[in-house]
Image (cartoon, rainbow, N blue to C red; front, side, top):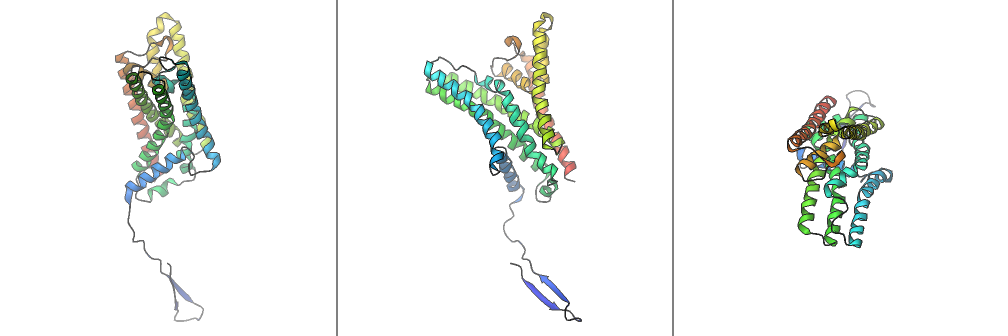
Length: 303
């Protein structure tokens, strides 16, 4: 508690010196690791509106439900009809629902970083025992974790439904594992791209529009060019290389080359093993580049 001591001045009856005796904090210092974990957990909760207003919860929770409902319907159909297999492969689910995933990234990536930039609170983080790398890693990990929850939850619904429908356990477990690997890679890539784009501007509206443009428009443009190339017999070899220019087709190419997935490319022909290596290297390179760009951005902001 603060104590106040009044000391009379040598001259003048109304002159006083106030000694405010604030007690120093002598409790435990939890350090950088605790601050990093706290920032991660709060950012992850914020990605679903937890701990925020009801209005902030509506869109992320609605998108989560939209992601899971088709999986539940597929399970119900498979159980009711006693189907031999699920209507959609695990690895194909995120590709089909890519518009919902892109909308989630566009809405939540700016929420994660734009407000800190807009209200100039980033230097306050760095005034504590936390460094630029801690902030970037916590934000990156939180966004990737939120995306993984969004994309892996419907796969879990499909897997549970497949077991209830008494489909082959080994085949379903293998497909589920492949799907989890695919959405984990997708979550890292989309989180990095979304945060980098959102960190460019403190205006949340601009960040949302930019993320949608990069993730959605690029996919539409690449799909159109691939369809044109597929229609021209001389251009079919270019389909795989065109797929390098969109985040979602990058993931599609990686999983069709190495995870046994059916490609969503026109004609259903994915990249070869050699082309798949290029897809993997480019995907990992983009994730690393996003991390590096975020580090560079926040070193400047934190000065």
